[in-house]
Image 1 (cartoon, rainbow, N blue to C red):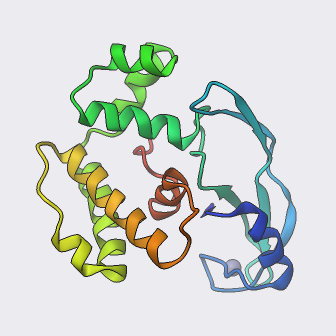
Image 2 (image 1 turned 90 degrees about the vertical axis):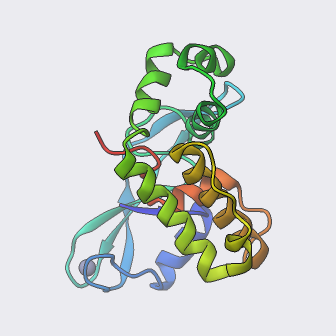
Length: 190
Ligand SMILES: [Zn+2]
């Protein structure tokens, strides 16, 4: 799996042979599509999506090119799950978050549980720090320690988003970029 920021651009990149295989560095070529799915957005609507697949010309392995705005095996978009994590960092409980987002309490509870191990939160934080440090070290120096490890992780990822948007693409949506930065692992794999 490769997480991409701009799925429309990926089609052109595949056709041009400029995407590299993450396993061997070979050229990725268009290769059909992954299964269609429906993803629920923050405003309550659903969006149909059919991620592209690509195949490496060298090692012949296939890869799903997952748009950054969704997460693997989750029915809700990254912006929804991200909003739940931000609310948790603001000390709200899972029942209240579920009501606010209009989602099942058990679903929200599963998301929060998948983003609470110290190891995972530290990994998220380090992803944010690495990207922000490459693009804008001054921004990184201005970050204050937060009261929780979750808040530290989200703050570092926000800094990476800000640095990236300033440098490359001001229009890019924050949770899409975070999806790319974290390779689709905003939540720890179960
Ligand atoms: Zn390959």
